Image (cartoon, rainbow, N blue to C red; front, top):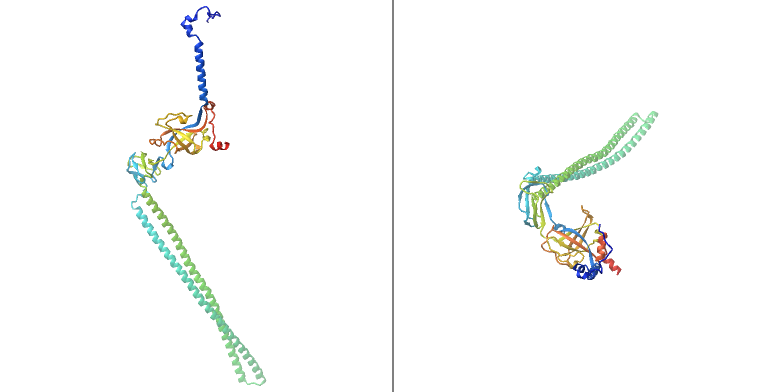
Length: 447
């Protein structure tokens, strides 16, 4: 240990004569140090009071503003085998230009005359439909003819029934007259017989009255028989009317049954024609899928499937295409803690990869090499990394974005928020608080 003494050399030696004592002298050095400290403290206080623009930063990449202008993969609609390529990677193609030709791999479509054969089947079925329609029309005419015949037959039979009724009435009247005559003849015969028994009439006169009575009875029986025959004819006529109606009803029912059967076959054939026409349209459309064309003007960036003779499945990606005309935008990823602070129309400053920039994040006006943007869309859900995506378009009131940047390049964005003192910002960052947030409408209402 050091053995320090309480004794001092002050006053015993002349310290000014020694260089080391002069250098250790604190008088002048203390004044310089104090002044430096005060100046540094003043500068620090000034810096802490300087305005600082709060911002939300995030990394992203360049994309296109519209979905149809973004890089896309061209797919095949049907399976097939690659037969010929018409483009190379990096080639510029216009909308409708042929990229490749494929051939069929399904045995259902191997027939080279498939369309012709299906078209012949359609014509055949259409002829069958026409024949069935003509048969239906013929059965309709037959049904109409049967109905007319039935009406005529019924009219004739009803007339015959009326004639039979009149004949029955006439024979009935004749029968009543003859019956009355027979009664009179019988009474006369009875009276003559009584007179003959009394001797007042001769046997000859009695026999004459008996003959007259027998004739009257015979006439009565004949007339009654005619009446019965007329009544039977009337009954037969009425029965014949029912028979005619039933017979024609059966014929019409059979014709209608044939008609409905024909119509059923007709509708089934029409359905087959429709199905064949649909197949023909599908085959025709499918034949156009053998040539894969470009959906838009752009550049072939990468061939996903290569070679000749390679088979591809339906819906499989073949080449990727970058549209020639596009409006640039930036997909910026932000953390969930910053998501509530963002809104459409908010200003954003960007630094693009490969473009020099001198950035003061808190003083955007003093930065150089940054470009302005405006928030146009904000997702309502996070991606796999738990970040929200915002879409930022170029700010029309700011410097245009560099013409050399391309889709897919990286970008670093800063969404500008409220102006606060630098000291407050340091305190906020140290404590991990979110940035101060306000809306312009709220400020206007407060004013």
